[in-house]
Length: 221
Length: 373
Image (cartoon, rainbow over all chains, first blue to last red; front, side):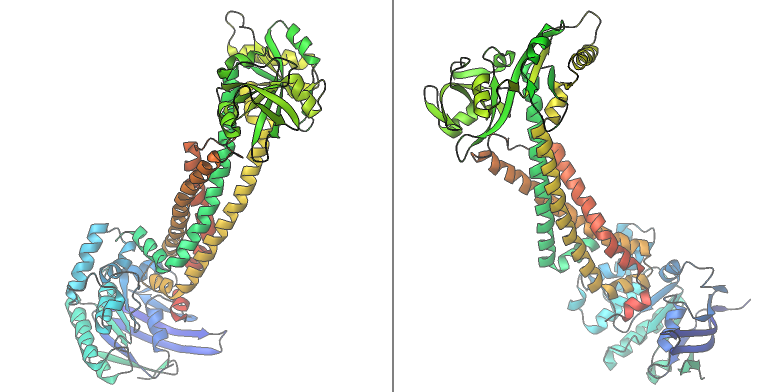
């Protein structure tokens, strides 16, 4: 039986009525528990690929498969994003009106967890990322590194099988970048989950088990 | 953290805008509570007035605008076997001074309705004399007591008594001899209605059967007139109908303006939070949950604005009840049902106003929303 968890088959993505071709027939497979880095220059299509893998968007043609099932046909994409995938963004995207503890609970509203269970789990996740002393802080009271840790805790809220990170260290200094990468790789190993990171930093890509390089919408290596 | 808490925090993000929106909704609901509350209270007072007067049936014109009945009808009415009494009455609204408006009734001195008034000072008037009896609130507002004179529509009248009635409307009203009011109103031989007191029914006959039979026979005897049960007349006389129509018309306009305020606030809020909505969608929130969040925010605006509005409406009525110009018609109390209706309407207005912005927010594609700058 194949160990392939996530697969892209001849994936293309066009924008602006075909004038922009972000992806041109990409094939890739990501196995369970694998750490994959997607690299490439700006505008090469790497973030678009990550969005398609995460069910944020649908390919123009081709298909994305999760455990062999096409995301286009067999899946409720909201449920897929909520239960199977965790997202970490370069700009953190924490809700400014909510405390760290509250931000982490956001994805849990799509589960059957009660209020106290949500709070307990969010506190546990923030402990896991080393922010047990910052539960009640608002995003603007956190450092950039702490914000990204909060976002990572949020991405783990519903125990996803796949963690997708789009330039997770793009807004951080080198010291914080190293800490965040240590945290992400530690979580990936501990939880035995798929980690796909989009980056253009070779130092980060080297941490991955496998690197996929994209250029002009095509996988070049 | 509860779902409501997220909604509240979103609303508190732009406090000034939220407060201004609440003011808009509050004014709309205050207008509703004050105006519709006044009209209901007015209606209730009419009902009390009819109940306390012993009137069973009011005989009036069938048409709405031509409201006068020929006085000669009275004799034939009284000849009907089931009629114990049928007294003519004129009801008018007059400005007794530039500041004081009041309901003015014209009755014969021996009207059965006179027996329901409690004289606090002085005596009853005599027919065909320029004499007037004042309700206790009106007497106080005018500063008049028995023995003093007052002008009504340019004619001198002597105040002969101060009375307490069964309704707040009577407390703020004046009662004149029928003929005097006919002269003042240029209504020779005409009255507004006949108030009929029925004899007891035959044994085994219910009040309802007695009423139905009497109405049918009166209407058969007078084809141009209708015989209304007192309770129906109380709620559908011209003054009540006009008050109700004005109240609802003005309230609907005020509520519409309040709804526009909520719609504008929610549309701006969704516009400003496009990226955040994209994040919520990316994190797995369904369209329905995004929609629910925005609708809850709109409903909270409606409900909190509604609470301000209920208090504002109540205060408005209290103030109106203390002013001489309006004290005769306004009791200053709000039927509790109106408060509930006001809050219910405010929430519904909020939900309706929030629907389109909520739909727009829910339709956002996560990727496009995340790209939004």
